[in-house]
Image (cartoon, rainbow, N blue to C red; front, side, top):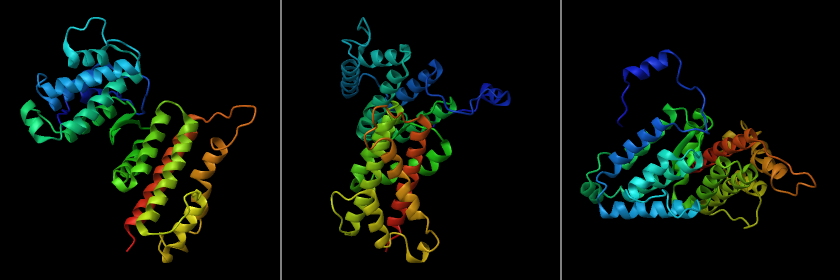
Length: 305
């Protein structure tokens, strides 16, 4: 990872100029240029036909989704440069993140092919590119990271490192594809401030995780079983060892009244004549609680004989 602790950085730290909290509404030109440096190292030569075609696809996706005919009024520099210029020039945070997500999804997918990287003379691997991107986000105090093919919002670095990231890694197992998709959807809704939808996807991910564990272990359940029924089934089949159950008597209550209850009271039923807003901090708590609970269940399943 090409990161250097140069003099100006050390001085900024001494003067307390680095942000201690994340921000979500601004990405500096400096950070965008650093992202372009990572891109250039990762894709190598721009003249490769496959790379040009890939960026034409990125260009077309951005145009279609943002209702544009061209990203720039005058198309003259080629698809790669026009995508880069669009990211540099737009002041809309979501548009910047759209470009970053599409570019790094391409790097993550296509540039794992050693033959392509050899042809294009790539200087860094996809993993190195992703690692530096996430470092640069943190360095600038920008609360986003690239994980599992998507840009997700990061609210607590400790919780993200200890719960969210391990969950995404464990759910990348193809057997947990449904739960992984639902958990990523929850992050997507959260990023776009669709907090009610976030709660719904959290519960889906929680239930899908338990159903998949039941499938793996051969435990019988009904397709329409609720979270409460699935939790009971997990306890009945010693997902938690018997010798530990006496020490975690409150766990079942915590699971039953945690993820499902929060969703039911705020998003799962009719809201009456007055809309019931779900505050941002409430959705953040739900995401973190879901991550911690799923992580616990996955680790418990791995420990089964």
